Amino acid sequence: MSVRSENTTSCVYWFVWKSRKSDILTASHLVLKWSYVNVRHLDADAEVVLRMIPKLEGRWRMYNRVPVPHPEVPDSIQVPAGEEVVLKVHATGFQIYICEPSADQRLSWTLKRPEAKLLDVNEKPVGSHSAGPIWKHSDGSQVAGKITGRADAPDAGSIPWLLLSANGHTGTGILSRVTSIQRIHTSGGQPPVRCDEAKCGAEMRVPYSADYYFYEPRR
Image (cartoon, rainbow, N blue to C red; front, side):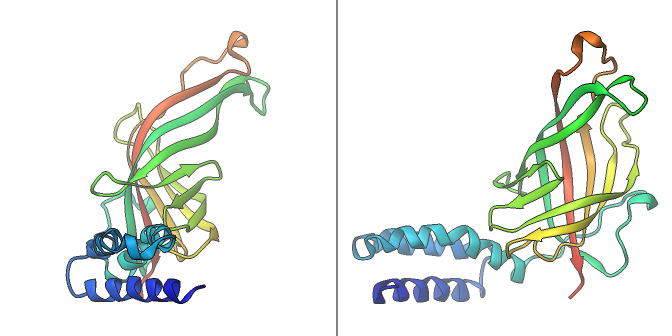
């Protein structure tokens, strides 16, 4: 790394440290402002600064987050004692089903994968949800989960509320210490009722939305 790059990195972290005394969202805004004002001096280093912003903001949120209360949920999907909410996101996308024979050889719609965008409280995209199931955050961290509890949604036409236990992590960031995940406030996502021979092998994309709460052990 050049001397200029080292100075660039030092300045970036100085801005993040400085902003810790004020608004939780200030870090990335300060870096953006600084990098554009000084872009004529940074040359290629400006790109380095801009690439760092999502990770810096994610790290900033981890250490300066406002506590999020646990949602009211049925006992069957309560998280273990001693866990706190580290992230809440709203998901919009699809539950994707395929019409295929089940264990008893009857045709039925089977969930193939979810496909959704994750949005923060300001409706800003912060990640994605996909097969596994896996949740990926824009800071580079991701978590996989296994279903350990479920409860019927208040709306019979919506997919169930779930509790999942984390069983795999990748990267470092806000999802790297997650131990439990809740899917609640679901809307839509239920497969069609009928799956006959004419539809065998067909896929169906069913729109859905939900809130996901991510938990980690209380510090």
